[in-house]
Length: 367
Ligand SMILES: *Cc1c(COP(=O)(O)O)cnc(C)c1O
Image (cartoon, rainbow, N blue to C red; front, side, top):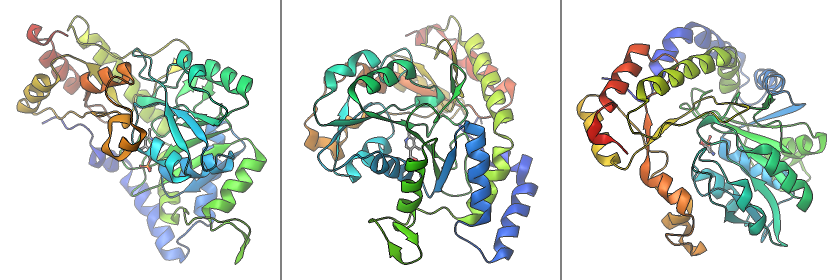
């Protein structure tokens, strides 16, 4: 049996340190925000090469607050990709703003910068590029369009902790960057967690206030805020795990390179690392026209796979009111119909990668 992801294997390598950190919090009597969370914020800001990091309870909350702080309001439009996890578009809608989708570049699965300008209207306030699967979007082009049209850029880096674009860390290039620490992400809590990073003092101050009921002092509520605070246990656990992140990224990259070698000539579409980028391989998705057959064959052989994502956001029933039917974004729709995510995690043994590769080297599955 080769699992898609094995969080127990990761826990086995660092469980003692995590237990010590969690126990310290349990005995401290301080359970929400506090020193443990502040220490994580400082370490994560340093890791991302930004001035501020503000810890929150989920990646979705991070996006919601980053957009609010960027000045997005009711009736505004926000440009993003339809090929993402639902949370990206949901956060835009929490504000009463409208997600305006732009199709993807089929090579990288990320928003196609060449199609962004035609989607800009007088109501456009922001662009939310998603660094899908752990590879950063085409940030130079996106930032130059944003500058030209005076738009904020909020990076959805929820899948891209430690990814780089020309040496710049994910989250550090836009006005702000948002991260998720959901357990299955490359840096995962023992529960839920999220973070906004920014080098803007003004953004940081607003986001700090918004995550804790809009107060500047206790019971003095300056703006309408939220309860989006991070638990102290998660702060302590994540600080331990952050120390391992670089080695985990290297382990993912080693396994992704090996997949590339063992899948060469298989006829499958193998995902690539674009020039100048450091891909952190949250997801390793191949493309195939025989997905169902392939997934069934792998399941029979004991190999777990995933689909990220089988339905693009504009075709989700929850977004039917946008009236964007099939054919609206052909590249995203084709990706949703053909991607298959293979097992990949830092503790996965290399032999398992070779086994999956050998199973996929069967001519009948050529794309
Ligand atoms: C996971 C994820 C989110 C949401 O994060 P949560 O912590 O689950 O709220 C947002 N965007 C993308 C691209 C994600 O993968």
